[in-house]
Length: 230
Image (tube, rainbow, N blue to C red; front, side, top):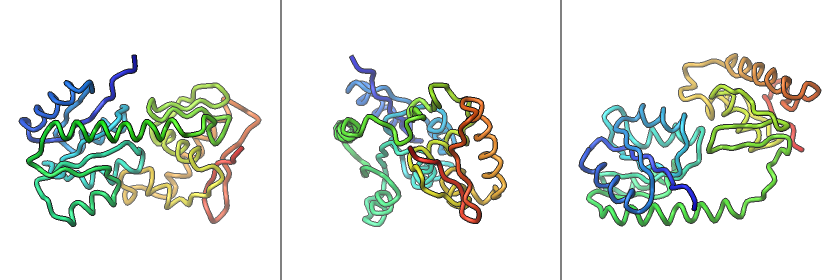
């Protein structure tokens, strides 16, 4: 028997959240509810979820901003809930990476049905992926937030994990410091190019501890960094 899929509900109206929790739990899903953008971001960064339902209007921000930040480190499916039915809102939501868009008021069972459709589609896509990872020496478990290198589990900080994950998923691609800041750090305006260099240095040191004779991260002077493909 497979484990229940975990759904994060980000909604500041308790009555709506309670309704979604009830119908999703009744449909066999596990749910977690938070009401603030920053709390949701923290949970998404530190734990594994199968799908997120995001209210567009939140007390400390909006779901669009949350989705933009989420897409820097995760590709889990997202469904937006909103009180607005304007076409431009739907377009913006889909363009920044949402999988579906539902306008309030809505049928809770319709939401559960859409969740099921999206997760089945994702499951079929995952089943069709090649079993071999792009870099055979790495074993990436995105859901658990773990990476093994030549069979050894790496003790990585969050940013080290996100950097290495990005490299593994795009072997031989050169990323500039600016691209890495934009993709990995929540607010790249508050950090500097040197931050990338520092994290690359510590990441290399941890990789050498696991395989002293290997140095898979390549420095391209004036361009950036890449991970050597296999």
